[in-house]
Length: 146
Image (cartoon, rainbow, N blue to C red):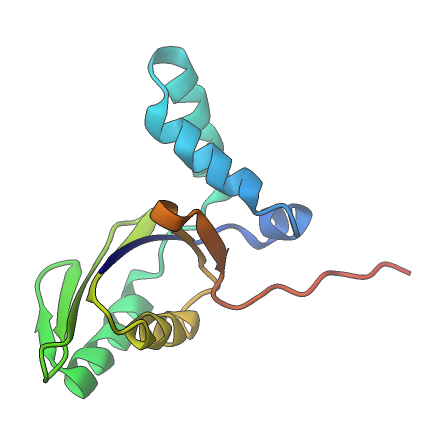
């Protein structure tokens, strides 16, 4: 079984405004992937506006610890992890805009392990498109105004 996740770092003020309507982000990212021409340019500008740059240094530090704990290798802006018993393996890659995680194997606890480590870095919005699942690594609290 394989799972593919895309993680985005969304500006706090935008994320707070869309609290409870995270599906709008998913819709925007999907439309951006499928768009062409002028519409693509407009959608790319919208995506650029709502995203924070991925904190590369913190990602590298946290994944370096993970490679030491679990076992794996690091190459450029990517990490390959593998269970010592060969039950699963995962690849994590990142750019300035997003992280991608590909996990292969039946063990879903590795997903949780990766998300626990990455939540220390930033509050990413994780999207798994194959199952239409998405959510925050650290759930946001709804602001109450008095």
